[in-house]
Length: 192
Image (cartoon, rainbow, N blue to C red; front, side, top):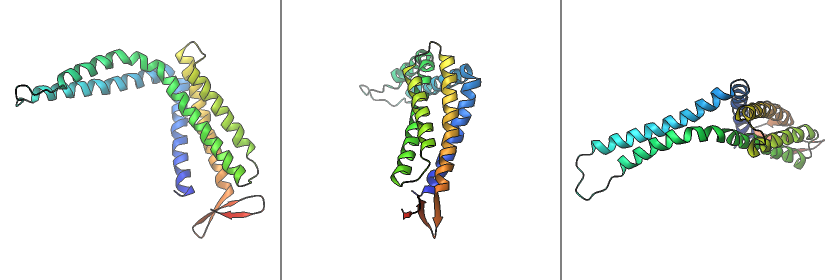
């Protein structure tokens, strides 16, 4: 995959992280409830589809088993029971997203170091902050989910913004010439 295509993906992911960060920062309870109930709704719909499918099949031979009714009921019960559990898992899931963002920046920093590009320190700092924020969210040292969601929101917002900054910074170091991507280093040009 070319660097330009990777950068487009990074920009799209960054915008999504920024939007998610703003929503979690300013509306943490609404965001967690919406996500949890949305997932529960999907399970309820899957349960109803299984139950309806079971009753629509009238040509079952005696002794043939179809577990659609049982699966449908279990999916609905599962959805009703798990929605509150999902709310407590959301910060952990989002923490992994922030951690992943930090690890991606760490990889970008390694690429800059490998190609002897100056100015890798800001990318390293951004990576470190993302990794710390992600770990804090994953290990959940805070008492309330809303506070943690706000902190994760700040982490996502920071991750999205720093992804854009790091992507722009790295893009300035890379130039396209005759369809070949090259990396401008400290005085040398290496073809990729």
